Every structure is written in structure tokens, then in C-alpha cells.
Amino acid sequence: MRKMSVDKLGIDLLTHDPVVILKDVDGKRYLPILIGPFEATAIALALEGTPVPRPLTHDLMKSIIGALKAKVVKIIIHDLQENTFYAKVVLEVNGNAIEIDARPSDSIALALRANAPIYVSERIVLEETVRDKTSEDEEYKRFKKYVDSLKPSDFTKDKPKDT
Image 1 (cartoon, rainbow, N blue to C red):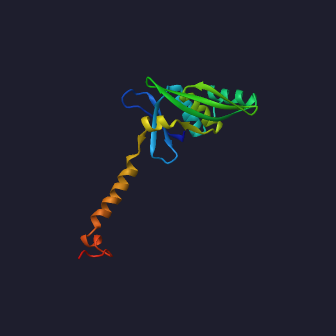
Image 2 (cartoon, rainbow, N blue to C red):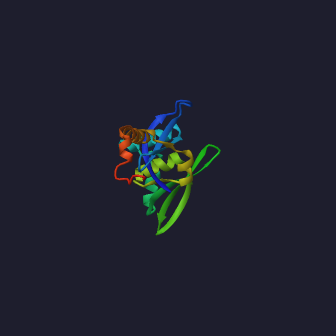
Image 3 (spheres, rainbow, N blue to C red):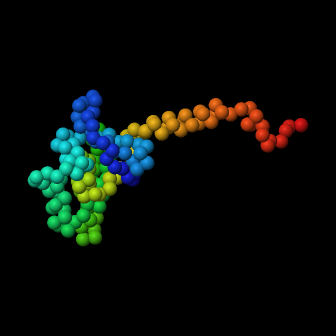
């Protein structure tokens, strides 16, 4: 499992649907997930810390979980089938872990409200994330600069000469 966080919300250029973009803790991999407009609003409000006059669905879920003396431990985005991501909310109830099937968008909105970590299965991270090319480009530039600075004499210093 890889810990991730919400990087940003945006609009998919092809479908014009809202998309939430998760990033891993190293900031090198990004996972875009298409979501609905209501879930996008719920996530945006949680990210901004915007108070609402009446509880929204995810606020209600958090209140119910708390009233039942349970706690959101984490959410896990664990599968992808036919272009649909699957997630589960892991609750702690009386010392026991209970996993509840949920959509990733609802899970993320709840996790943000409950300050719970977001995890993504390693398979999804490896197969579905987009790598941040910026860090690779910078590493390439440093390497190229190093190679360009080399002189033939750099390869002969302190080496015994063939006789």
C-alpha cells in the first residue's frame, strides 16, 4: 500500500468531468480519478475548510460514525475493474477493524473530514499512476551537465598505466 494525499481537483479535458488527483508522499506519482460534481464539491469544501450551514452527506457520515463510537482509521483504493476504481473505508469499532465498500470519491471526502490517511494498492500505483517527469528531467539535466563537464583526463587519473 502506498500512502497518498489529495493534490488538487480539476476538470478532465476530454470528458469535462471533475477529477481528483492524488499524489504519493514523495510527490513523484499522481493518480487521477474521475468523480462526480457533488463529490468534487464535497472534497473542495473539505480541502478549503469551508464551513457549511447544514451538514452535507459526508459530514453526516462522519457524525454518525462518531456517534457510534467508531473511528475512520484509513481509506484504501484497492482495485480497478472496467475503468472503475474500488475503495473501502476502514473503521475501528470497539477495537475491531471493519471494512466498508465505498466509492473512492466518497471515501476521499470522508477521509478529509476525519483526518484519515488515504492508501492506494501498490498494483494501482504501478499500473495507473502518472510519473512526475519534472524530477526525472532535473536528474537528467544534472547528469548531462556532469557528463558534458568530463574530460578524457578524468578517466586516467590515479589509474595504473598499461606497460
